[in-house]
Amino acid sequence: MVLSEFAGVSMPDWIDALLRIMFIVALMTIMAFALIYLERKILARFQARVGPTRTGPIGTLQSIADALKLITKEDVRPITADRWAFELAPYMAFVPVFLVFVPMPFTETWFVRDLNLGLLFVFGVLGLNIVGVVMAAWGSDNKYALLGGVRAAAQAISYEIPMLLIVVALVMVAAGRLAVDGDASAAGSINAIVGDQTTTPYILLQPLGFFIFIVGMLAELHRPPFDMPIAESEVVGGYFVEYSGMRWGMFFLAEYTALFLLVVLASSLFLGGWNWPFGADVGLGLQIVLTFVKTSVLIVLVIGSRALFPRLRIDQLMAFSWKVLLPFSIVQVIANGIILAYGGADWVVGLVSFALLAALGGLVFYIMRRKQGEGTRTVQTTPATPRVITAPEVTPVEAGGD
Amino acid sequence: MSELFENYGAVLVAIPVGIMLVLTALLATKLLAPQRRTALKGQVYECGMLPIGRNWAQVHVRYYTYALLFLVFDVEVVFLLPWAVSFLGLMDGPEFGKVILWQMVLFIGTLLIALAYAWRKGVFDWQRN
Image (cartoon, rainbow over all chains, first blue to last red; front, top):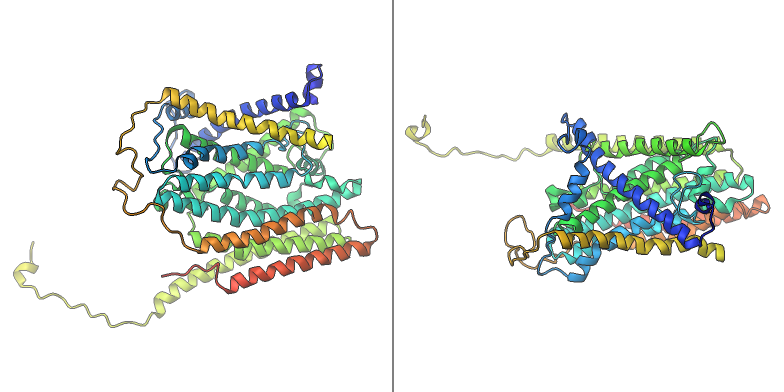
């Protein structure tokens, strides 16, 4: 309705929605180009290189050159591939990610639609993305693709659960705070949650939630240290081995779009999105700046993680989700429920969550230390098997070759 | 109801736009890219060798158990989210909210038995060697 007010004409609802979606399409294209360029530049800096420099001023046109190359590249499909699964997989991988733009609040009034169950919508629809991945893996008729696809599916479903539970815990806190204003039922909408963070960003109330959300985000996006599904040294690229040209580009675009969306979601839920924590009213211009700065910080964090962390092993990754993150997120949900039902203050919620985060950190540190100790101990305590190396009988002439 | 349709109708508008985006990109490829298919190019990729054996390889059953566990907890979250939104609003008296809370704790506890069982059975410990 803001659009129609801006243009001074009334228009049907679906045209308003369509115009907003077109705006999103433009935003998404620019964002994807910018992200690809930024990733290459930032990674280069981490590795003491300079990154792309030849295309355009300081390499800024590199993404466009990449896109042109992808479009003019031959689109090869294996003869033995399952045609329908192979050709429909890019649609199935991209369209759900695109739909997630609908409830995403970039400023107080700039979203496509403020869905009342926006959070559930985001996770439900984003999860469909994995169907496209599995279709690609199965349709390619390739061993590595299938392994990568199964890994991707297992990883995505494992990390979705702690993420969802932590979002439930966050919604409980939001509902408690919104109930003071009399409308707790708005707590499912992302924009209402952002609107509530005028005094306190939720990262202060749910620091454990922020940590688990970031970890889950990296896993959902197949970003290092969680990039086993697309690990080139293990499954030579994973589920898109057989894809080339623009068909592969669609998976790439879906991945970067999902990165952008999850980063915007994380900044909305935990950092206050377009909201400024110290003043109630911020103008439209400042809201754009706030969203931009918060998402940029998180994007640099995500890209940097690719240069900073080594790749985990797939079983370590799965165990970390089910044995550590899941119990902690369940404890967080129950703890929030008890505190809120017995009328605890907000600072109690924050303190308990911070204590849980500290416990999680301590546990991870302890496990890592113990594993290290185990490694050295097994080396020391292996029974010394008498391993007599019998030197081959050589004649002095052969031994003294040089 | 009309407001519901107004909001979620945008999703229906977004679906064809998303499909069109992929379609135009793939059409552009079809128009601009060379197309010379050969039998060798149509082989599946296997690190430079000709593929050996059936390509739909068998996958370990452990992935299947993860899928089962996922179902347990994903359905749990579907129940948890409406509860999380409403359990404080439903507190007419303070006692009622507590009753709802402990019922939900009981529900989560029941599902934790599934997690404990899987843990005990070693679903999360992949066998080495």
